[in-house]
Length: 390
View 1 (cartoon, one colour):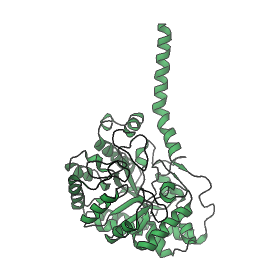
View 2 (cartoon, rainbow, N blue to C red):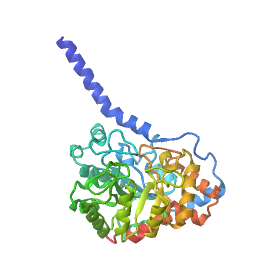
View 3 (tube, rainbow, N blue to C red):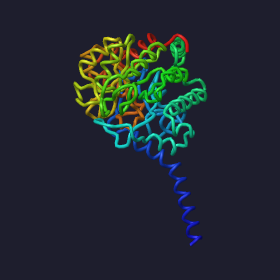
View 4 (cartoon, one colour):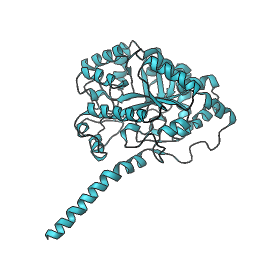
């Protein structure tokens, strides 16, 4: 019997070890896929030539959640440095996820459970991240910093207006460069402490959404239980973000939270990844009223690439949402918000971004309009709102 128990304990130990090694990669591979047959197989000369001249920015990517080497080209997932360079990315927002409930859905979630704790353990994140949402944010920022340091100068971290200006100057002489900036999905990472806004700002974060998939101390989520507006604490958080030069991201916010932020905003806001109710009517997406009010701040709306945001699984659905938003609020307020690596399936990965340029041209957008949609609008807002110095 002792020999059997010893044998079983060894088997259990091996199985647990295999789970730690294999499970995260399997989850990443299954959750972040490129749909087959949805990417353009040929690119016209006009689209290719225009694409090479674009300054491309994407407002939302969750690649830091996964234990993937972003300096190497991977055969799965959506984003890494080689694919960003192949897709001619100038700037990618790396947004961090700190907590998501089990049974995740668009309609109603509470904060009583958390899948990211298990992900942190399985991916062998530091123990400090197992029990602290703030530490999860800081750890993911550290991961990005290490990628920047080891990129041989190909990847820059943008935290200031002067840094963006300097990067743009370097990239004009060397297009084989790209950049990143940090965002946060859900201000639960503050852990109820206003001073943590500065802690996260000092760690490099320049964008934060009040909520993610559940209501928190800051405000109501579109997917929460109460779906209320900003709390008193939430008002102070937004004020502090604006003081520091951190952009408010209204993705996942309840309609009342959107109203409350817009009522007090003195700077442009982002919606990093969303759809529009005009082409895909669900609680995830923005109403015409909110699209117009966000544009009135000078802000931009990042159109997402996944089916729950666009009500379609192909590039045509993305272009349809972009077209609707442009015709409603003007081309100066529409951008890209892929949600790459956010446990979604998309028609193309970062390397395939030229497919979207092709599709926009085919839909009748002019080159000047495509320049703005694909990144020009994001660059304008960042140059306006980023702090002069860290």
